[in-house]
Image (cartoon, rainbow, N blue to C red; front, top):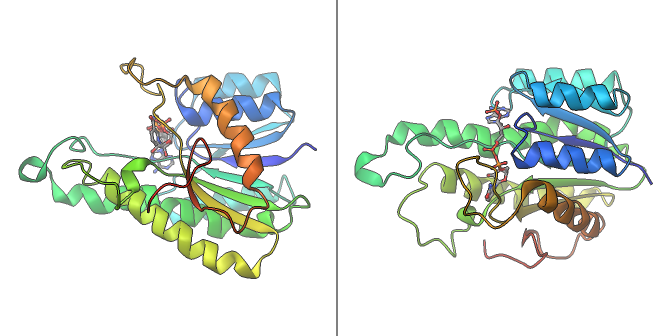
Amino acid sequence: MAQTVLITGTGRPYALGFNLVRRYLEAGDTVFASIRKPSEALEKLAQSCPERLHILHMDIASTESVNAAAREAVGITDHIDLIINNATTASADTMKELPDFDLDEIAPAVNVGAVGPVRVVKAFLPLLKNSEIGGLIVNISSEAGSIGACERTFYLDYGTEKAALNMLTKTLHNYLKQEPDVNIICVHPGWIRTNPGNTEAPLDPYEHAETLRALFETKRHDKTGPIFITYTGETYPW
Ligand SMILES: NC(=O)c1ccc[n+]([C@@H]2O[C@H](COP(=O)([O-])OP(=O)(O)OC[C@H]3O[C@@H](n4cnc5c(N)ncnc54)[C@H](OP(=O)(O)O)[C@@H]3O)[C@@H](O)[C@H]2O)c1
């Protein structure tokens, strides 16, 4: 059955969000793809299926922007079946250790990478609750957000925002116990070649988007299984 999907952070053709959009469109679904700045690649994709790809402008750092995008979506659809919180950020200092890292970069990163997804959930939850197949929220996290497995001395911003995203996912999972037809998980998606300069990563974004799409479907009604998982579906340590 075709579904309606919201995906954030979809403007970069080489990155995961854009390739998830491609995969859901190929599966026959309707996609709300959010960007914070114009994307030629996404515009071009929308021309090929204007009825099924809706571009929303949404800066997830801003509650006002997210709420405005949700109001726009309500004018187009009465439901959403899947929210994929893919957008994230990291500062220019992300690879630096404590002495060289500008600590003032941490709070803005958490505002985007952890609070941003929850802004999206809060604003779009009424649409998700209208899903007839059961609503699913997928927060794209990272192994870098695992406190238990952390051995790094850098990623002070990125690791913190993903750890905070994991905590918020668990808290919302508890909250959503009162909604039997809505589930939420967070996923380490694997190391993907989403940066044109990075040829080392083993996973191709277009190929891997299909693996993730299949995985997400196994989690739609799985409210008792692991919440923080890897792209193979295995549990990952908080
Ligand atoms: N790539 C990997 O190997 C890997 C590994 C583990 C986890 N992940 C996670 O997987 C997801 C996708 O990764 P990626 O490498 O494809 O990401 P990416 O290339 O860094 O793309 C991030 C996206 O988020 C958007 N974004 C940033 N700030 C935003 C804001 N304030 N409001 C709205 N959108 C904003 C960016 O938009 P602009 O284009 O406008 O900047 C961009 O489209 C991320 O959550 C990442 O943490 C990736």
